[in-house]
Image 1 (cartoon, rainbow, N blue to C red):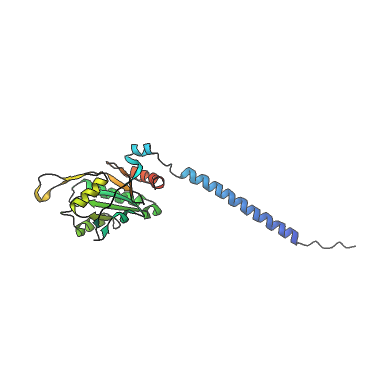
Image 2 (tube, rainbow, N blue to C red):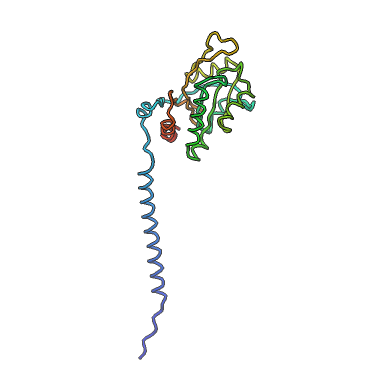
Length: 224
């Protein structure tokens, strides 16, 4: 008596099941290994004390900088809404500055170039003029775009600029004498505004490029 021929379907189904199980196991292992590698490679976030040691001073609470009405280097209104939606690094300087301003702008350009694409997209660099008498919109536009086409400049009425600078604890004053070639005494600090438009801290001078990048990469995910 001839035995009935075995159907190949159970064997085929079992092989498919084993294959699917193997795929899931390998995928799970890949996720675990990837998470381990990411955790190992990713830079450790710096604490507030470590940031301060690196010249990055972070406030215990975000600060509201109030209302202001200025003008950017394209002649467009610059107000609190202009500081929302992105992180903003504000440097107060002027186009006739002989030393600290061009040096800091070069540094900020290098800093911006070192940021990862997504972080760069989430960051705007702004130079606020402390010399509105000489820094009109056209002059400011030419100056900031020389360092980086994506940088912005801001100017306005003297009292409005002084009020804005005071709200960020960044004083400035005209140096007596000098005639038409006068100098402005101002801070080299870089103010840091979070995407909600709140003042959260500042980078003290002198600035170090690598520390500036390292500090900002730690601050970005922690102080939103």
